[in-house]
Amino acid sequence: MNKRSLIFASRILLFLLIAVALTIVFFPKNKGKNVLTNIDPRRYGRACEIVERCNDIVAVSCKPEVDGPFLYVDEKTGAVVAECGGVCEIGNCPPDSCPPKAWVCN
Image 1 (cartoon, rainbow, N blue to C red):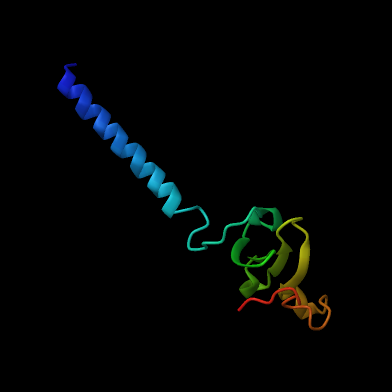
Image 2 (cartoon, helix red, strand yellow):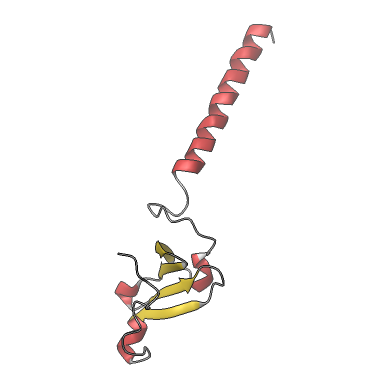
């Protein structure tokens, strides 16, 4: 390989590395949910995803539209603060527990 080819190949490699880095930054796995948190939604079920964050509470949707739970999770501990959604339709939720009182964001 001559010097010119090496420079060309290194520029292409640099371009590819920048493209991959930008893809990782601007297209995270949690598509459309620009919620920065340490909570892994798969911990609560395969179909779960983070939908919102308010102070130290994270809203985790586990398909409540098909009777799955909608969870409010403490971001620091990972403990479920309130469980809403389909589970409440069978009477397992205390009245006025959803959303929890700590959820004060709009």
